[in-house]
Length: 370
Image 1: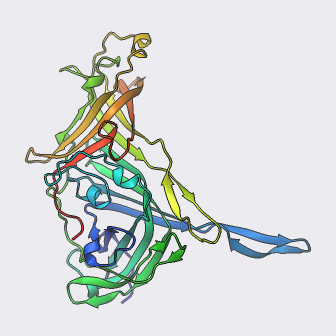
Image 2 (image 1 turned 180 degrees about the vertical axis):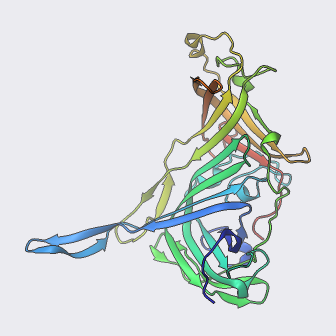
Image 3 (image 1 turned 180 degrees about the horizontal axis):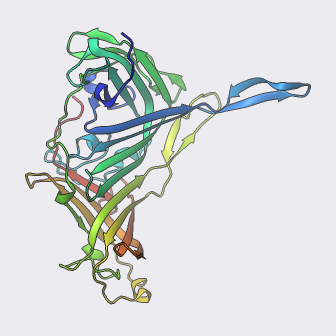
């Protein structure tokens, strides 16, 4: 029966361990997803000639542009690990750079958006209820953003650049174990040809996270190490009242192409990469400070974001190492509280650099791919 519409109830978002993954164990469902937007643009070159007004042809000279953006509520690091980020957890105590899994060249990952029949929850429904699947192939992460603010659930936004997009209608039913018969959207980037084969996905579930969502009242933002560089007071009982914090990790990429291939054979990260943390707060007291002296202070310091669950246990910790203070901006107007905006930044180090960049730990130790 044809659907009249598709709403969030009926959809689920999956990610693969790699572009060549085909088994259900090589794919996992992302949790607490709030939005998923995808599109493609075909870039064409018109062919015209003297003696004819209309074009002779319109040929594709460049690979299509395929984009994917999605957001989800932050929990305990399960989604981050599934996406290839390094997250220190109870079963892996070694320290590693958060972005290390996305710095080296590779073929990217595949993502899938499944939709079941109208009126049904995607959770718990399998083959006979799954009517369509959108596949996005060779997806590379281009931006990771975390938004924390008063009155809102902590939310992560992710942007990805993809090489291909396809769709599968009425996938094959395999009992209650998996959704099968899904055409892989992956591309062999070295040969510039689409991959063949079928993909299996597990039925949608509530998730593996140890917490449903995190609350703004359980967040601690520690920027007190910069109290000797700012005019606003960052430490003590009279310190600024933080209203929001925004963490951004941009990983812009440049496609590398060659003759004889329809697709880029590599999408490399544009280095250097700078991560930024923006803080907005209600100003309280100020402290004696002189910018002429501050600019001589070359010390680099750490800042951290700690998020706890309702049980009081720590669920996620983001630490920005070797940060610098980029700006401090004050705003005041009739009818509103005087506010201050602070911006900090750090450069991302290599996978084996324990002193520069973003380092993250999470409470979840579940294996994303089995």
